[in-house]
Image (cartoon, rainbow, N blue to C red; front, side, top):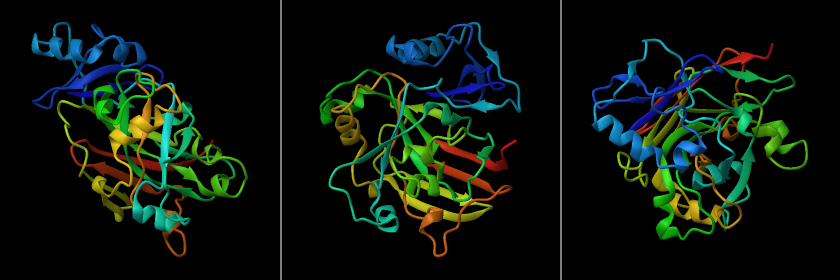
Length: 284
């Protein structure tokens, strides 16, 4: 299945993309794709409802805004330097263990919403990443059981203000958490449809120019390992998002660096999930 959310900011409703490509609203039966939905077996209930004929559903209007496919997660956990080529361009060598940091959940937004340049930002960067959505709470889960705790996968662009991340002391979270710095979408693909994430193509473009072109097979640490590893340090709740790292080709890795400016258009895509696009705009 492919889960979506749609509607104006603050009024989003859940929906699905059917096998024939039709987008339907499911809010009459499923109020929200949130922690409660996932924790209470919502994926299985939704699947059964679709098989039974989508009673009380309505078709979503063409041109409706797509929102992040899940309601605001309790946390967004990110993995740094998880592709060898990105670790090289970032500097410091390949990590022995996953490098973890957080993005504020208030940074999340829709897949095609504008990315806002915050005041004082002059080193805005992009990172296309495969995002894991947790479906069942897990704490110290074994690696061979990790997949059973995943609801599905989506795309996240981990936007960063590199000066705030690297030059303002403290943790990376300062450079990662501005509003709109975590667009998700365009949908969440459930694990029964996207059964293997081990060798997916990931790409990004800026103003039509190819910047990143990698494969998930180049991850240093696999998705099951990451879920297991992270669950050693914190309880992962249904709806939580794990951003699994990015291939090389980010703006910081160019010489000279190729950071983003107002008016730039950034596209990202992952095989088996889809694509999304944001325009960079100035803060009001």
